Length: 469
Image 1 (spheres, helix red, strand yellow):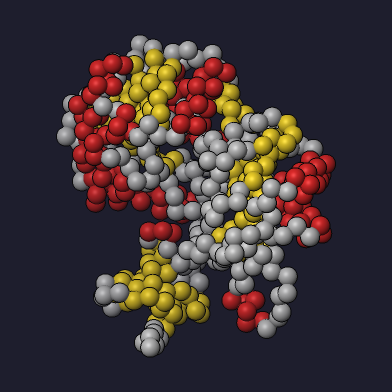
Image 2 (image 1 turned 45 degrees about the vertical axis):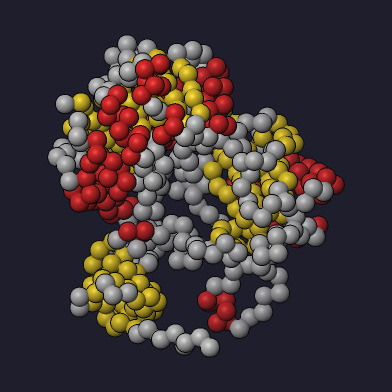
């Protein structure tokens, strides 16, 4: 017989004093730190504890006593439930201050190395409708909010098209409007949802792993080109053709209409064949006259305008004169490599994902950049002393690793290669700071430039320029 879980208390009159990790707010009650989602510094509220550990607790605002003076009305009707934009209630200028502080704290507390004054963060030119890619999930069992449950209303139709509730693979919140992408994305999603209901197409059951409508990916490039990829759970060509024809007819602006049949348990499509139903198999982004082909499996920074600013900072920190050999580690589809290629002698790109390397090679050809070469494989296995001996000692290294940062073996090879300059681009200041502490063995930090790619979230990109001592 299981023990009954102890009911945790409500803390009355708690003042929120700061922002914290994962987009939460922070309060201190006696000697205990309390993390509170969707709070704002200056709020005074009753906080119901949801989880309690010896050194901290987690809770939610049960009753607002006095809202913070800096609070703004969130634009999104799903704010507080969706979990995607946890800072919508905070003024954008304050969000930027928090992100600047996040970078500074990581360098001071984790790297613990000397660094110059951090340049003011580059805010996003657009704080709404800035994403070029969105992904939605269809579900036969819509997640009911606490307000819906308390209403006593019956919800016989639980079909949904929206986002997963954080931490729950089988719970999907039905989304009416998301303001992170052009409204065309909302109209496409709502049309497919309505068409599916009208024609009796089965929405996917995430527990039973059955159903037809499964996921939807929409990419809207800065060039105006539009890609729609529909993932279905049944290889029923009649249903697929009916759906694709309806979407193509309703949205003639779609330039790449594709689908993929997935009968696996998970939603990943990297190992599946994607069928181009209408239009081209790719869309294109443009940057300083360079064209980047993006397929359904390609990675591209999701904020196109800010990506240009991010890469411009990386180029500035590289201080290219025209005769350098550049290594671009974690090159992805080669966007940074190609962006730099016109300003140096040669670029060598390395990336784990083979499909991304194929995209990089295609993009190099499309842009006539024959001073590039790309290699696929695990970074710690590809980037060896032998590899560097074969391809030449780099003058400049660009590193743009995933959130986990760099493997220690990779750091050691970089130190042994000893390029004159390193430009470290990161989406996680904490792991970047950890790596910088190791790199400091031979390098000094010359410049630090945060860039905001994701307004209304706690995420921040940071670019650090380093010079060999």
